[in-house]
Length: 316
Image 1 (cartoon, one colour):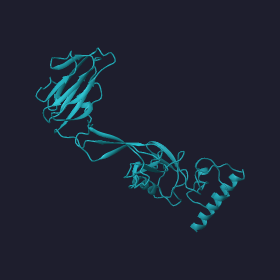
Image 2 (cartoon, rainbow, N blue to C red):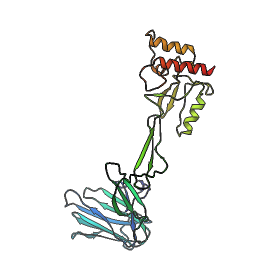
Image 3 (cartoon, helix red, strand yellow):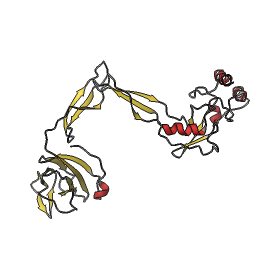
Image 4 (cartoon, rainbow, N blue to C red):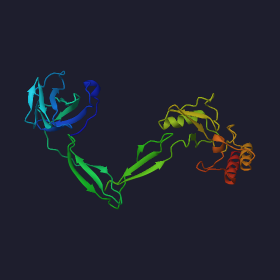
């Protein structure tokens, strides 16, 4: 059996979430009806896809259950206690099977009918990739109806032939990007990660000549819509401390070297860091972050000052 994708719950309006089933024409599909008491009364009926909610159409399918109490009452197959409901479609129209539980809730199963066939597939799907210490699991399902054909264990091949990396999770301001590539021989998956676009509420990577317009377009190309509400002219260079908004969350830009937040990197910024190191002035917030050449560092040092001087000399 295979699920297929559309939301019928709103259409049907029943209590429990709809399940989607693929069934073969003239071939039995089974549904277990049971509850904790094993004495409650169940009712089951089938409605063709084109019909309103009426009694079962016996021409479109055959409905039965392996329970000796079963009887048809008002067009519904009614029985007490547990049972395995069997549905055999007699045409390709499809429809919905309804099962009323003893507590009154109704479970609905939307049935898509395909032609009778012999289940087959040449494609294995890796369910659990193997590692160098544990076996993996692969499964083969019918290409037509999705019925499970086989499940096998799989071992790491030891001579991987990896395909191209595919992005599985895109980076955002709060989420690292994850890319994976799969071995075509054994299904082993290898991952690599890149940093999120922010760290502790600060956004790095931009230099002193970057404009607000540049930043907005950079993130637009990455699939993220951002704004900079505090910037009056988006064509002007941004400074450390400028606010960036994404998904109603605010972040502060950090431009390494622009410690005094004036959009420029010069000797005045160097003096700010020297005063911090000498204990004459304490840098905080985005200004403190802008004094670090490596944003994973906990404190600036002489090497950060040298990096800032190199930037100043390179700009002259």
